[in-house]
Image 1: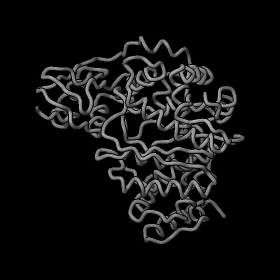
Image 2 (image 1 turned 180 degrees about the vertical axis):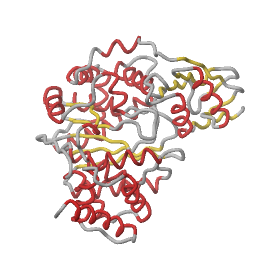
Image 3 (image 1 turned 90 degrees about the horizontal axis):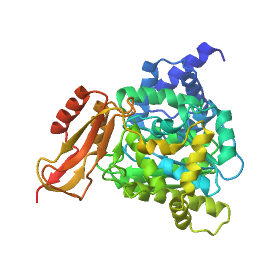
Image 4 (image 1 turned 45 degrees about the vertical axis):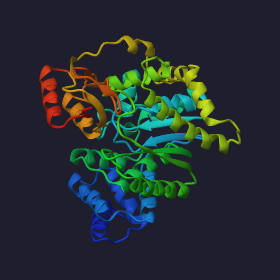
Length: 420
């Protein structure tokens, strides 16, 4: 088949999907191959995204799309149990992955974690990890790191893994648009491509999240399980009702500090982030223990590895193996940004935190491009606040961005404070 013929067939495949017709694997593979090699322009690819949103995909098409994304890109192979975790995202200030990875690796399982940069939130796992160590690893560097220390936290977009998906993600980012079938195939393709065979999926659910109802979450969970079974993957899905960021830091630098506070078990660590990280680590370890015929209690193992400092030690090993430096220096590092404290205009109890507004205002402050931009939440849901008491600190590279963010908060508040 000539390049011109493949190109025309890909366009015809998009037309067929727009007409509501089911696609074959050959059609889907050719389309993903054209996108992966950047032979379709963004306008044409956007039509494919729109077609998927309009009618969704059948279970068979979802399997075909995942398989084609994997087979048109780089694939990694590891022996034995290969663990992985992924959140469908949309929740700012919740860097559970960076706590889970060293826990699982310290438990003796390999976890070659590839993560994305921020799409809709003020920081992605890859953005935060990049403060500690390089994340633009080659497939060879990932294999070497995992073989040396049991795990890694790398940026998936640099690897050529599911390259069609990376192109689609960049288009989605421009139009702030994602749909659930696409999220499923995107995550699963990357997990399969890195050789994962034991996977925990985190689905945050809430009215200001990507997934807003339990019914939606259960529907998405079924899709993950279905695709996982087709690839002989052990998978569990955690549906977490979510009302606010699990951490207190928002933005690259502040979220990095939250991770270190949990790993170092400091008194001021964000407890909800610790709980969420442990819960997801337990779920993943449970899958791994069952497959390795171990009778260990995953909750006890995860907690002990964190409290004892073994997870912290493993995180430092991962950072060092990826070419980073000693992590202790970050705890005393001062953000190179202007700071302003936002105080409560009246007293009461915080009954709601608007996650969408948190992300929007963090973007105004400069996150994630400006690594020190973001915020620190002094208060969270169900906490009392007095008039004039600090609600949050905001950080930006210049005072203009602070002014704009504060003005925006007047129209789109982060906190709803019910007067008592």
